[in-house]
Length: 308
Image 1: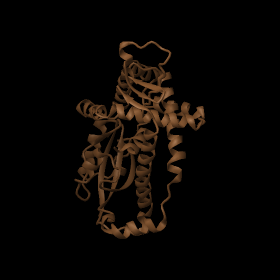
Image 2 (image 1 turned 45 degrees about the vertical axis):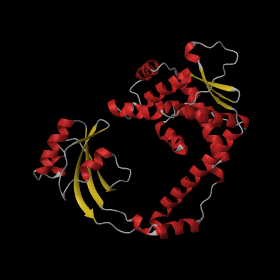
Image 3 (image 1 turned 135 degrees about the vertical axis):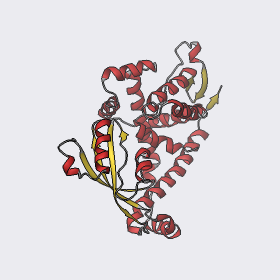
């Protein structure tokens, strides 16, 4: 299982929920049926339901409709195992008495709120998922604890030697062609009507400087390679353009962009100096994956885990 990928994904999505509750002294309701025991803690049916609700809230910022349903379905298949592993990692953090700066929690909550147009919208989304802000704060707090113990026990012990980087490059040199480089003018406008009209004028030969008084736009020069962290909506458009061709407006996060292709450079073989950072990161993360899996397996071996 690509467990370390899950942890990194949590940081790009802002949260990966961890549900840590002690029920030894509390009455259990129907929704709190115990589904697993992890050492001296339990995971309940409510924990599983809350996990899905929380992930639905987070993923709905990126996915819609069928895509969102498919993403949630992919989580369901391994849900209980993921919560068990989260619980083990959090228990280890508490054994090591990891200290947490509460200012980091407040800062992260602030980042999450910025995804919404207002605090009211944020609170409404929480209510929709059956969550409170205190729930979110607790999950962020626990996530930081998890991250800290993994950093201490796993990540800080991994090294990549220079000869490993060089050896990997020599064995995979053909994979490091830079690919075709495309240089673009990217014009940003506030609404679709303006962008449509602006694009039409560019296509008919008008110069951008002549259009500046009629269209409030900003322009940036971009150099892009296919498949390298470019938004799919942009990549789909710009890699179909011919030289000097102007694109239709593309809606990116509420702004409309018009692209003009100004130059195409053929693929080139990248030197070791150019790619050594990428190779180092790849080797580091590969080792991280292996070591994290080994460490987590050790936690499981010395823990009591009972699935009901």
